[in-house]
Every structure is written in structure tokens, then in C-alpha cells.
Image (cartoon, rainbow over all chains, first blue to last red; front, side, top):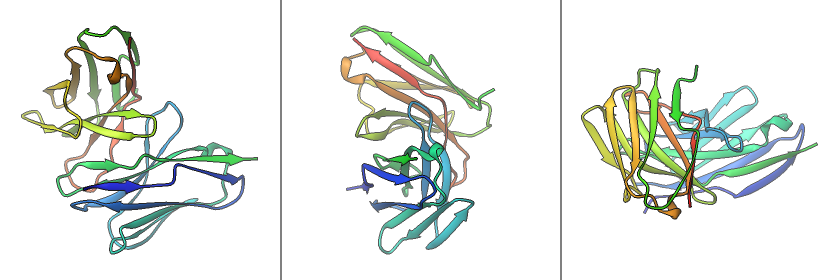
Length: 109
Length: 113
């Protein structure tokens, strides 16, 4: 079967660093995406990994290990506006996206 | 203006009614998708279309139908709505190449009484 696992909820302090993990088992793999979704709003694209290693984009970095079926999103210098859900999604072999249930991040002052 | 526009944004209706949710895009993307989002279940794919003549079922297509009227328009219909179809519905688009992110509309909050 196809499955993506993420923690349901995480809490961190403003200015800190947080790592959100994602493990996946899918029948195909064309890449892994991270999206941010504020409550009641549309998901917005954050990052993409298709090769093993770290991709850095400002305060956000994403890591992929294809052999382990594992990714993480790293958020540095947390700000209150980073309070949101973070969705991990895999593009499978048939060009369909499989989404995890999301990790709800609360940033505390 | 938004690149991916969904109408209506909110809808309350009764069991048994036929409902159409519409999606239009100005991004010029070939691929369009309909998802529903439920608390604790994440985004689940209902239907997707890679061009005007291509329609495919997703993981939860029962009770839904779609129409791709043009490259820019993709509508979702609930022929006879039931309460467990109450959810937040998103339309998304992506470029024709693989490994492209999806771009989401603002969603339609649908309540079926």
C-alpha cells in the first residue's frame, strides 16, 4: 500500500529551530514536496526534493533520503507566522500526488 | 486576481441536492485536480485531468463526477449530495512536466445538511 506518515502536532518557541519528519512508502517516486497551509487557507508550495540531500531556501530547508523513504523539513529562526500545518506529499509513478495528513506546528512566544 | 479561482467559496445545501463546484485557472497549466480535505485525513484526490480529453478517477471518486470544459476550467459535481461529503474542497493545477508543484485555489467549504 501507499502511506505517508508525519507527526500530528509539534510545538516550538519563537526564534528556535524545528524539524518536521516525514516517512513514506509509495509504489513510485518522482519527487517529494512540502507545502505550508494556514488554517482555512490553501496549501502553498515550500520545497521540492528528488535527489538525496539537503535543499536550502532561506529559513526553510528540506532533506531527502530515498533509500530510507525519509524526508524532513527544517525551519530556522521560527516566527509566529510559521504557525501552520506542514504537508508532505510524494509524486508517485503515475503523476499523482499522495499527501500526508499534515503536521500542525504551533509557535509560542 | 488569483491564478486558480474556485466558486463558490462556501455552500450549504441539503441531502439529495445536485451541486457543482467550479474551478478556473489562468496559469496555462494542462493538469488539474480536485481534492477534498477532512480533519485528520489530509488531502484526498477525487479526480484529475491531464488535458481536456483526459479524465481519471482518484482514490475517492464514488459519488462525484467531473467535467473538463476547457484547458482552464474543471468542474466537480455531486449528483446527489450526502452529509459525509461535507468537507473542504480544493482545486489544484500543475505544469505538464513531472516534478512540478501544485497550485491550489482558495477552497470551497461545503456543508450538506
